[in-house]
Length: 31
Image (tube, rainbow, N blue to C red; front, side, top):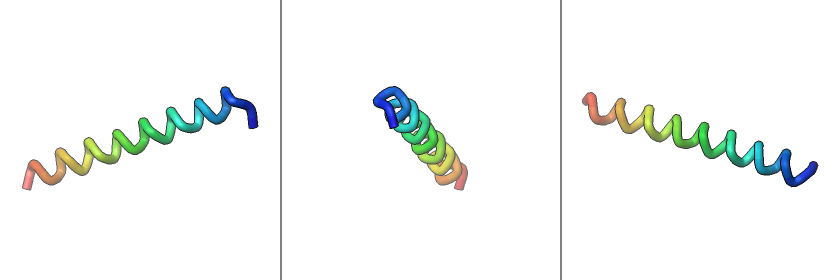
């Protein structure tokens, strides 16, 4: 794996984590 592939993988993973966190945050605020 090249450095660019690792970077892209990390960015996509972090964005996914942020998306999940924001979704759970809005879900808990609604309750």
